[in-house]
Length: 280
Ligand code: AMP
Image 1 (cartoon, helix red, strand yellow):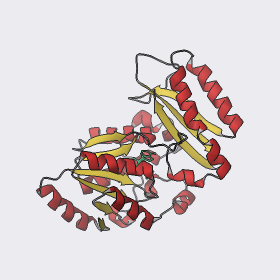
Image 2: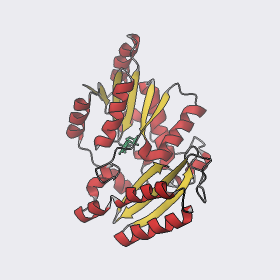
Image 3: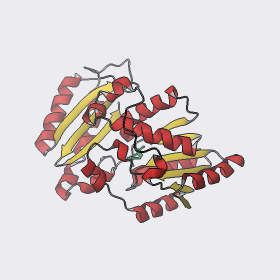
Image 4: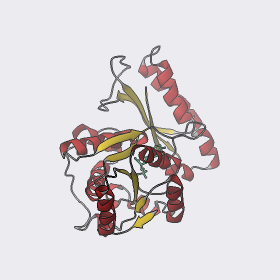
């Protein structure tokens, strides 16, 4: 597995691969890798000829400087996981390589509604930071396919919009969320949970499944109330637990059999904010 820190070294390598007809599959990450990230590497390995993974903790998408400082960076462990998963090349750029003109300061892609709901309203500026880094990484790697996780459903929609508006020639592949045995979506934040918090964290997925199961028999408001009460009783603070159109994230007041829907949730367990979703 090759490890590149410079844009020019990576692009030389990728130009050669492309010249021999290889299709590149790209998996952008912020590191602290777990089996959820490896699900993306596996999908890229199955769907393309050469897998490139980037590890870059993107300052532009953090709301709290303290979170950025505390973000885990277990790089040796990450490289070992990627090598074992069959990743061909890893891009480990410095901030200057990614943002040669300095950090982006203004929002420059109109993602409209997506910037105002759910994670957009909870984390102002976050998606503009994501857009900035993904646009730059796509221009460097120029992959045939880009792999993103369903876990971050709103991020997938934002990037879909970026690709469409800017006519970026890449196919977006959304990979199903990889979960722990109790249903908890894998996330680097899970390691911050205490043991008792980790034991109850599976309730998040239980709630999503109960929304899925009850969609034909109860109004959403009833299931939403049941789930919120259960979560609060267990010690969660519920940020949101909502129903949305799976294609647009337009919020829905009730189940609608005529649409594909997604249940979306964000909760706090102590200081740790966890998000998840389930397409119904
Ligand atoms: P991050 O390193 O948190 O920026 O995540 C990098 C990519 O991994 C994003 O596309 C995430 O949606 C995806 N991802 C994170 N957790 C999971 C998971 N449990 N299953 C599938 N994909 C995931």
